[in-house]
Amino acid sequence: MPGATPRVSIDSDRLWNSLMRMAEIGPSPNGGSRRLAMTQEDAAGRRLLLDWVEALGCTWQRDKAGNLFIHRPGRENRLPAVSLGSHLDTQPLGGRFDGVLGVLAGLEVFRTLADNDITTRRPLSLIVWTNEEGSRFAPAMGGSGVWTGRLDEDTFFTATDSQGVSLREAIQACDEAGDLPLGEQDLDAYFELHIEQGPVLEEQGDPLGIVTGVQGIRWYDLSLRGQSAHAGPTPMSYRHDPLMAATALIQALKEEVLADPEGAARLTVGDFQVVEPSRNVIPGEIHLQLDLRHTDDERLAALDATVERLARTAAEAEGVTLSLERRWHSPVTPFDDTLIASLVEAAEALGLEAPTMMSGAGHDAVHLSHVTPTVMIFVPSRDGISHNEAEYTEPEHCALGTQLLCDAVLARAER
Ligand code: HGY
Ligand code: MN
Ligand code: MN
Ligand code: MN
Image 1 (spheres, rainbow, N blue to C red):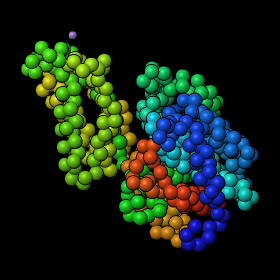
Image 2: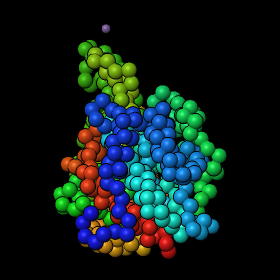
Image 3: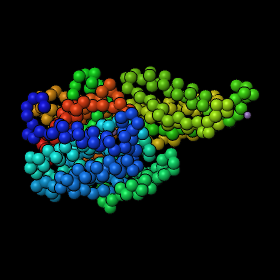
Image 4: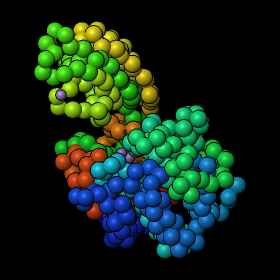
């Protein structure tokens, strides 16, 4: 650990071993993780965590959304808890660190305090949020959204996956529903350690980043319907081809995004389906999902209007019909200045000048920031890669981020 010795030192080998053990649950084909929200793999990962925390003597509770709260009593348990956590669910071909690092770093903090027989003044709460990824069930950050009241329960529980299974049914099938009412706990603060999932820290050569907020996010579901017809006899002028409309739209949107004055706009088409595809049939119907992001809410709002305008233009040009559904909007979210300052100070105590930065990815901390002071810590992602089986963060970066988390949580829990 660089610089001054912290009050208590986390065990970096134990942390790494726990990360690698968790990665054995729901492995993906090429060395990543596949624990989609509320699948048996997700439930198995939660059970492994609970085995570990029960070995520490911690009690735990779940709410009806399956959010998991692991309690560590303090000296004054009537005080609001200092919380830390993240998520265990992953993308379909996800990595071994996204979300998991924050949860297992919290476990390592609990283990380190137990090793040193430390009881903090405030109680601590390690939280695992349900369905952060939003891959199987939209929108993302569902468990933290419904717990903070920022996502309505009906939208959360009735969200369905591609097989028509609702999140409510999936939670029940995994036996992950608890009886803790939603939003029950009042928290003193929320800390989340997470991998950066982009190239900034690695390019700067920084082992840590202090996150000041999260960029704005908008999700869209688009359907374009034309007329399926024979690929051979149908002249191009006769066609109403929704796929051609979609490709024209995507190209037009890409040009708009690339022309963004700050170069801060991000557009992703992560899902593109032709209904009943066949090589020699002109598509009749296609569905696509857009993910649009920006660090400035006004620019994001302007791009939102552009999405609608360009989609209508592209549909008209091909003589197809458009349905456009705005699935989710998460505005630009600032984190807590006091907690940011406490992390800067704690990093300095470790002999590090940690840069501050915005997060490109959404996190449960976005919702938490509306109900309690919230901050995040980033550690580098190798080659800036995440949401990819090759996702990787160096053991020493995982350890350093966990040490900073431990020091900051300890300081806050003694206030
Ligand atoms: O979409 C996101 O930014 C997050 O990974 N759920
Ligand atoms: Mn994540
Ligand atoms: Mn993710
Ligand atoms: Mn035929």
